[in-house]
Amino acid sequence: MKTINHIFLAMAFLILGCHSAFSQNPIIRNQFTADPSARVFNGKVFVFPSHDIQTPEGKGLREDWFCMEDYHVFSSENLTDWTDHGMIVSQYDADWVDSTSYSMWAPDCIERNGKYYFYYPANTNIVGPNGRKGFGIGVAVADKPEGPYVVEDEPIEGIHGIDPNILIDNDGQAYIYWSMGDIFVAKLNDNMLELASEPKTIDNLPTEGLKEGPWVFERNGIYYLTFPHVENKTERLEYAMGDSPMGPFKMEGVIMDESPTGCWTNHHSIIEYNDQWYLFYHHNDLSPDFDKNRSVRIDSLFFNPDGTIQKVKPTLRGVGLTNAENQIEIDRYSDIGKNAEIGFIDPENTFKGWKTVFKSEGAWIRYDAVDFGKRKKKEVQLRVQSESGGTIQIVLDDVNGTVLSEVEIPASNKWLTVAEKIENTKKGTHNIKVELIKGENVELDWLRFE
Image (tube, rainbow, N blue to C red; front, side, top):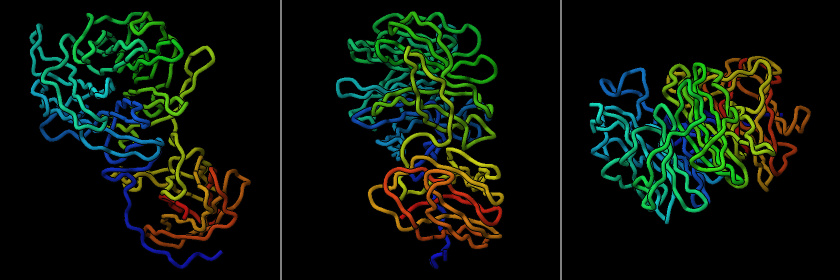
């Protein structure tokens, strides 16, 4: 095949813009995000994460620690295309918050009677009975999940802790859970701003190692208390089951094992959306050398017939269909063959994302669930770089599937966008396999179909 003669220099393209993005794991690429609280509001999924930043000079608790100043909210209808609605609450909004600590940790949000209640922990300016400041949990209220939010003047009285989580039970009673050494629960008043019962410590949980980040949900009459726990050196996600929102709970097992790369924290939420359950969690994908800058991921979650949770294996591919006309980042692969490697396009600016390096002939990578739509595609475009050049083959569905195109990669030490006509095009949803059939050290940023 002959390469179409419109080979041109591609301008740098950041996958995540300021307001909208499409991506796989991690799902947010324009900033660091952690501790995702996912909620379904008005037919969309909204994610309320915490927001890691680099520690400003002379600020925060210490340079090598978590530094979090504010919160954003993101939404999606397909779990692939995400909109950043911007900052909703910062540490400067409430007078009770110690704005020198940069400790706006894991939040949550819930809807009740047409109002949206955003709960967030922060270090306080209030000196407790022990003569020390501590963490309180504040509330901000809005008419829409994306805000604007108005913060309450004071934190919730009677709570000293972090990582708030809210459950509204089937009878309408609201509960708030939080952590501080142990995990606690209390009823909330109907105004969602005050406790309606004394805090209760949840028993029958592991007594050794850090426990935090509770997330409670109900399914088929079973209440699941899920939480990160450090049994060894890093956090893994565990869970207990019970018949009541306040327990007792019985420990059942592990939802996700410790990070294989040593990320110290993991923090999560679990929701059902369009008849599928999902686990939202975080990892330090965009900051591999500093695990206090994290990024939100999603993977599917499944239950056994007895209600127990199947262990989730973290993936790069994540969930959701990818539109064939969008830029497909095959570095978020479903499967990868020998001599194909993944690296940052720019190690000094990891927000530019990753590239796939095909080291030698026969190197391949597969990306699942690409939606080609109802119209046949006529062309494939690839953003590539190779000093020696080569030929990339694109195959539909399987190792021995339909060959869509063979694209000649010109020799160049700059990133180029090349295009080639497609043969044997198909409609619908397919997997794609990309293989280097000639050459070596060919780098691929993304491909898309027109």
